[in-house]
Image 1 (cartoon, rainbow, N blue to C red):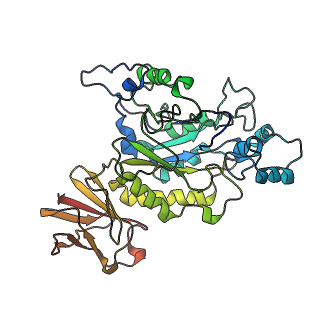
Image 2 (image 1 turned 135 degrees about the vertical axis):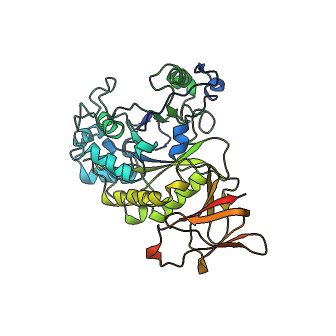
Image 3 (image 1 turned 135 degrees about the horizontal axis):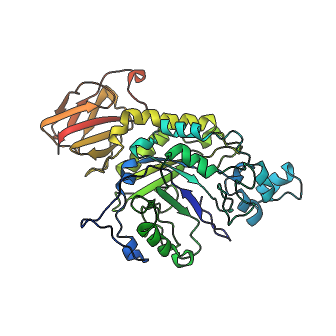
Length: 421
């Protein structure tokens, strides 16, 4: 992802979500935006993005061939001349070998986009209910995963797979749909005026075929991150300390040390299922979207441990998705107690998501105030839960006395509260 480099390249992390209905202003006619931040920042964010909550990130390219160190292999080796990368090349490749020589080895031989789409859907990125996938169409060394006419002989059609990888994956994910999201990166060395960002965004919002549903991030110049654009990334793996007043997204990777696949990855380097669920819950409670990255191999395979982690997220969301998808932050986001409770809300319901199962099967909640109509249930289980107020007017909820294997999910559990203040 982000490194201070001598030559900047825009990463086109593009898209692949569902095209929604046309957005219009209160007067019926869509507004015209001018190429300045005051105007562009006034554009409402299309609703589908906030409702989505969870997306899958994919880093795949020529860097997947050496698959060592990180996706910034070319820069660490040739730009910085790091000793470890120099030794790796000395021990594994002939002296005259260049980074460009990796291109023909990027074969994508086992890339089956329909299988990827099924996996992402099972992970919770359901395209019929507005989830999304962000695919790095071009990383910082310039290789494009589509037949770009301005990247001659350094694209996936001319070299390596001899396929339009973006087009094939896009077709598998969106069928008749167009790009909904442009995830820009590589902007940090120059201001937005160098990249002509405001003029591009004005065209995108006013006249492009996707002007009503397209969403963009905030990486449009070194002066923009966390200040201008659509939603805010701010920085990789960004998590705010409190509820922001602007829509944001946390992007993180299953491999803690790399965004692309690497052969030297160890089991301890991979986020655990409990870590992923905890990050997802925290992010959504604070009003953000959670974008979880994987790195396929040069052949187009998603390794089993990455598949396992994605499927674990999907399994959890099958039960707890009601508290995640299309939810809103509640008046209280976190209640620090022995169970670490995070709150979300939807319509009149409040969801208390707790990350540790409490001793004695009793959950205490201070923030929700019970009324005569209060009803408490647990997602994934039938029937109401018994509750009472203690001497401090806190809710005392009796949880089911079940063995761990009988609980509806692992790692985090959700209590739905109706009729509370």
